[in-house]
Image 1 (cartoon, rainbow, N blue to C red):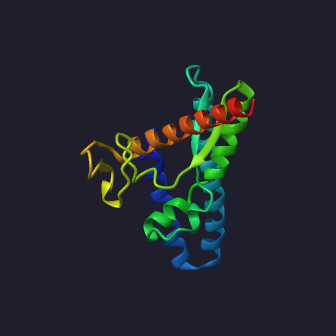
Image 2 (image 1 turned 90 degrees about the vertical axis):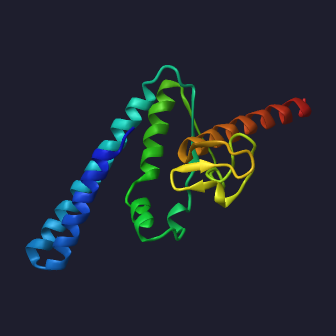
Image 3 (image 1 turned 90 degrees about the horizontal axis):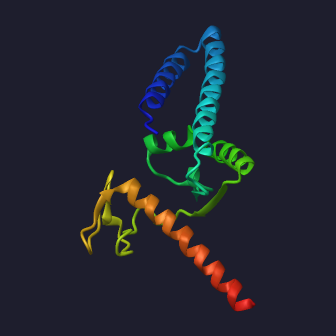
Length: 173
């Protein structure tokens, strides 16, 4: 899902919010309140549309998500912190869960630590592996888009947890 249109609308809302808050008049405060409701409805609609499209796919049996609990508590810089706190991740997850559960699709979460620093090819972990959107392993020189590499790591962690669960069940029997 390309977020260019979403980014444009969010930038427009941010600009308008900044402009109105500087003004400080009573009518500006009313407009800010109305804009807040508009942003919430926009975010909710986008989450509904995306989760509906995801839940209607017939070729998927399980969705694996990162456990993003506490992500807003991290200090990542002003711009990234604003972006992270401006999107309702939990709402997206709950929409996806209830829509997928109704269709028999599983939604599971895995630990998100180091997924963007680990090489999906050789499992080498280094902060220098990721530079913006580009992932280049310092050990094996594996090259990929950083988000694609992280998503492969998330999938691999889920598969590893499945394998470990199956082994523990077979050992206890």
